[in-house]
Image 1 (tube, one colour):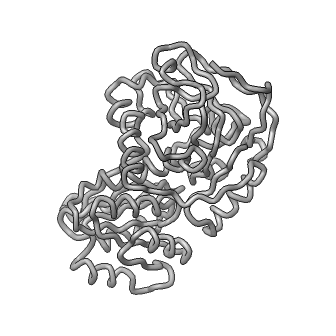
Image 2 (cartoon, helix red, strand yellow; image 1 turned 90 degrees about the vertical axis):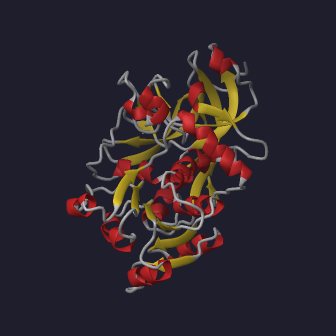
Amino acid sequence: MGSTPKKTMLAQQYDALDNKLHLNEVPIPEPREHELLVKVACASLCHSDVMLFEPNDQGLILGKNPVTIGHEASGIVVKAGSCEVASKFKAGDQVGFLCAVDCCFECEQCRNVHNSWCVNGKTKMQGFTLDGYFQEYVCVDARATMVLPEGMDAKTAAPLFCAGVTAFHGVQDCELKPGQWLAVIGCGGLGHLGIQYAKAMGYKVIGLDIADQALEEAKKCGADYVFNSMTDKDWQNKVLEITGGGVDAAINFTASKKSYDDAPAIIKPGLGLLMIVGIPRQPLEINALDVALGRFRVKGSSNGTSHNMKPAIEFSAKHNIKPHLTHYKLEDLPKMIELMNSHKAQGRMGVLFD
């Protein structure tokens, strides 16, 4: 079903030997029986990609070297494998996908926790332990792939297949009721989507960030109030006053340990929740007495599984959730990483392929 017009392609590959990216020419892969060969329409940059270049002790593992980075993309099916699931896709389908491969997709962990914990112990993550999506073609597992809903375009949908799914479930898993207060910590690539999901679910939202351009984006996405937690020294008291004693949940999309340290002060004592999504370089420090005495609860959320991907994407289509996406060329990926590290980017940045 379909074929590629050439044998090689360009790929942005991370090399651990010099801790740099290299634009290499590599072979176009051939799909296994359960896979789809996809022509990447857009691959967008996630903070987890940048963690490859940083020292961290949070369990990020590099498999092959060099490796094509990127784990957030959408594209167009070129060729399908022979198994029943793969054969349901046809050439020309616009699709999005998650990055876990070589897991079973059927065990309790794969269905309800995360594919990383598959009982077979063989899970690999594209963009880290296998080649990812900052290349022209990629093979993805058909079981972790879906056809885009009507009205969604593969050139703009890429951020929804990590940032979108992550932000949706991070907000939904707070289990708030309409009208309750949610603090969104970090209003950038994940947070600007989280604010849109929260408003679509009927929550009142306070956006927190250290970059004014991110706060402007938060306002556009519907945040009721925004505060710069670096320049406004009284932001915590203001949040407590606005909410009548604290937010019902605070969801942290950042990689800042300080923002985690600061979050409990704005959570309403009792049933208030700290939702962990962003992964700082250093381990978090949680006051055990606060948790034991019920001052606040702690919970985590991630981009989940192929089984909860579809509800997030369908909700996005129904409620017209749109990522703020700036397009670049493949050779511009180092510039994109620089912008992300300097907090100068708004929303999501993605490579648009021809």
